[in-house]
Amino acid sequence: MDCWTSSLPNDDEFEKLVMRINPPRVTVDNVSSRKVTLIKVDSANKRGSLLELVQVLTDMNLIIRRAYISSDGEWFMDVFHVTDQHGNKLTEDDVAERIQQSLGPRGRSFRSLRRSVGVQSAAENTTIELTGRDRPGLLSEVFAVLTDHKCNVVAAEVWTHNSRMASVVYITDEATGLPIDDAEHLANIKKLLLYVLKGDRDRRSANTAVSLGSTHKERRLHQMMYADRDYDVDDDCGTTSDRRKPLVTVENCADKGYTAVNLRCPDRPKLLFDTVCTLTDMQYVVYHATVIAEGPEAYQEYYIRHTDGCPISSEPERQRVINCLEAAIRRRTTEGIRLELCGDDRIGLLSDVTRIFRENGLSVTRAEVTTRGAQAVNAFYVTDASGNQVKSETIEAVRKELGLSLLCVKENDLGSKSPDQEGGRFSLGNLFRSSSEKFLYNLGLIKSYS
Image 1 (cartoon, rainbow, N blue to C red):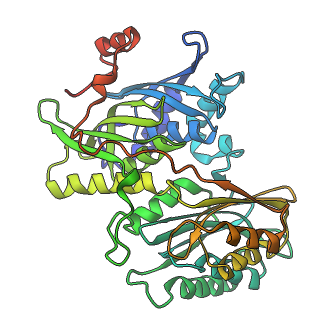
Image 2 (image 1 turned 90 degrees about the horizontal axis):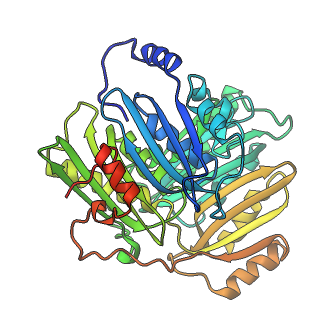
Image 3 (image 1 turned 180 degrees about the vertical axis):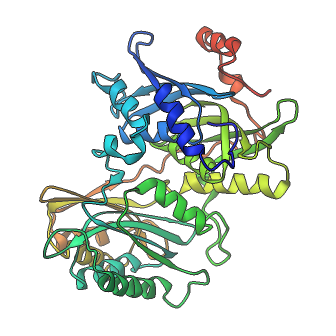
């Protein structure tokens, strides 16, 4: 949401000074609409503001139904139409305060986000980041290594896409419950995990990293998969079915000096975060944007430039933006059956569960691991080893082995249809019909390319 990246060494200090002088102003409006809460944010413009804001709203588990974003010049003004996860207007009195604290000068320290599931504190655990080629049984081997080395997995998230796997795992010492800071112990764990990740088929280099710093799981997973080039098509595995392929178009607006990025795909939670995160990591700045996500499909329109102030200038760069946005959307578009495991936590639980999955021919495509007090609350999306739907008798066999009350089955919704691929270029401008939207357009807060 900035205009360019300066090379001055004191840029960061200058931004902090500007933020102290002009802190973000957040307004929560529950009157203007009968169905949604309007969150309005205006502040001095700085790089990364849009991603920070969307990340805060996402971590608060808010559903963004619409968004209007404008950040030309030294100031930005964003309007978000949001609901809670049940589709209701917000009722909490401290929403504006929580957002304002998170976006203020101290927001980057994550102190205001400590309750978020996406953020882990350096004082509480050790972070392990893994990337490599995905294969059946990989997760079982990873958790087995950690269990053998007396590590307790506190939380983890695993994504797979295009035959690649990325995972952020938070561990503590089994005996003390504290972060592991013994360099030799960590080096040994890292060495064995790297051996497991490489296997005998990884043409790209697998990678492991150990950190004691604070991390935001989902932001790091996007960065890791982007660095691992999961947006490149793997010739060995082919491409994902086009049935739910997102429609992304990228075209230059020569008269405005922007590149227009239009996106349409089945809606899902955190979609806006995923696309904004990707554009930011690719070093693009969003100057204007409009988002509509009020039905089964989501529509997003961005006007962007590179951080050097230039629009996209070549066909390879244009295609790369398309591929990267498609990958960012698909990373969370999980396939298979969702298995939810809830029960008393214990050392080695994940190792045992994933071993049973492997022995029954299940492949984990995505996993979310959390610990709430003494309870393990885990979710696994599974297919068979070939990526197909798992047979019901296989699931029942796994449930009996783990305990029928411990493991529950929830079918993943795969019913969303793909956007019409024959429509060619589309624009959100055709969707703006209400008087309020026309008013915003006339003020210059909504800009549509037509």
